[in-house]
Length: 494
Ligand SMILES: Cc1cc2nc3c(=O)[nH]c(=O)nc-3n(C[C@H](O)[C@H](O)[C@H](O)COP(=O)(O)OP(=O)(O)OC[C@H]3O[C@@H](n4cnc5c(N)ncnc54)[C@H](O)[C@@H]3O)c2cc1C
Image (tube, rainbow, N blue to C red; front, side, top):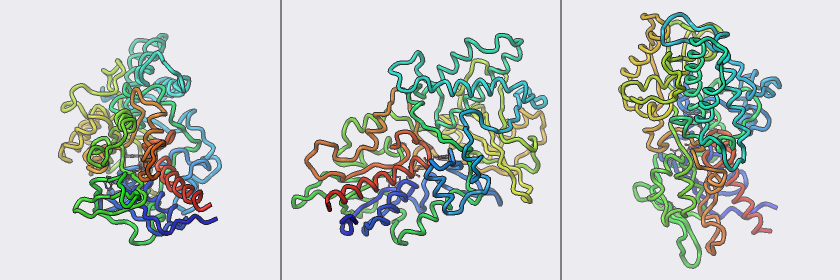
């Protein structure tokens, strides 16, 4: 039976994928008074497609992680016709990336001589992947001998590995592990893998399928979803300053959404989708009365870090034609370091990995995407673009030994200084557990309260129990909160 829904006013705060997904499902289920209030002038949030010359450059999310039937984002993108035929093949969907990413690496070292042999470096790659897979043994463990993923990896590598190799090979492989550890920081948007909880790390669930991109840009997904919604559903440039919940007026609870500029919107339900980074900074003013203590504790405990991309365009490639990823190995990092001590001087060291954007047939354009996380990344955001470009030029010249390589142009993201995001995505920081993600998604008022239920609901990537930090996770949380309201009203009507 159709739920009795038409009269209820629902305000969604934030027009990222979780907000759009929630509104889409509610509208399609017969809720007529749904409104999204968005702080910026655009929809998409951390899905943001830019351009570098004629090339698409994703400023936010690039990949569908685990593009297979189990991934609702993959199904949606496929149904909208947004994916390449290769991504749709059964073979691509069945690929188990836990085994090994079938990417062709090129390795360069800070001594600047010729490229390192892939074969020579493969023990570092293999061992690193093996250790990451080994972390699954700590799933649901009460205690572990190591506090963090970084401590585990460093201790395992130091104790056992490559004792049979000659001294200089062993040293080089240890330095390569530092490069891989810095790359791993990007997956978690962590300053250091020493900050990632070893048990918490196992909460993330990978899906099968080799990651794929959107050939015409990730924002195409948002545009398709938005095209199925009423044109006036979103109010842009309208930051919400306070959500007043638990108000009682004539015996009925309404939530008042107060916006910058003074507008006050009365709603029956509010779905909050603002990023965890924003919540960490603004929770005390965003909610009146304040959030319950256990929710606040989880907001503090869960991590939210910065991962930025720097796209760099060249006239001609200095990497192999079949290369997918470039690793830069500093010869003095055998201590397995994933962060630098003197950030203002050495921040560029944090950038160990560049992925190669495959040029379209005739574009003749050669673009790399450099990845950088942590406080080094946050510092990079503060520098003038020319200084960032100069540092990258020097880095590449050092590692290739070629003093003529000059980037044509660069484009970087600056997520830490984005006032509505305050970083990139969430991670399981030391000490957090599945309970914290449960607390994040718990609606207000909490169970046991006698006031009207489901006044404030919470969606967004940092509220998903196992797909946090991803677009598919965020999408599912939007649908989850819409379904919560839909089933609430269908129960009442029955
Ligand atoms: C550099 C980078 C790379 C990434 N790569 C990938 C990837 O390859 N694959 C992947 O799956 N995921 C990736 N992610 C993560 C992914 O982008 C996010 O998990 C997902 O887009 C989050 O969606 P969301 O709806 O939860 O939040 P958001 O997209 O952040 O939406 C929240 C919205 O709330 C708005 N807002 C904030 N405060 C207010 C306020 N006070 N009032 C009104 N509106 C407000 C914001 O402006 C924003 O539009 C990446 C993220 C970054 C930053």
